Length: 128
Ligand SMILES: [Zn+2]
Image (cartoon, rainbow, N blue to C red):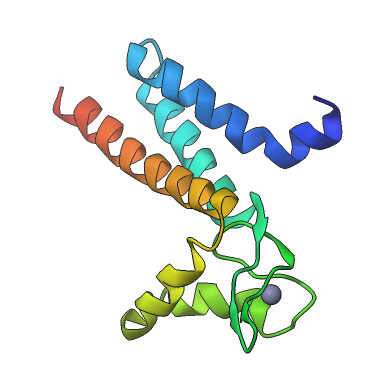
């Protein structure tokens, strides 16, 4: 993998590292939290995926960064999904845009795994 690919896909690499290393308890809580926060942030705002914003011709197929940001080509798309996250009655619409193709499904799953693992590993550390 070249440097450009690494810059684009580092979150996937980090996710793999976290999934294998995070549960071995050799990492301190600060590293765990930072690691999972980075993974979550990557999938929410940086992972290369389809825009997926609902349009007249179905979900938008332009490239965008992260599952919550839209493409740069259509002005309304850029912040559309991020805005939807603050409007509970539109979560159905938002949710539809998160599963438009396999890559996006994976990125959405990655973000969920990041959030859940971050919360779980942090609470285990706090309790134990
Ligand atoms: Zn778009």
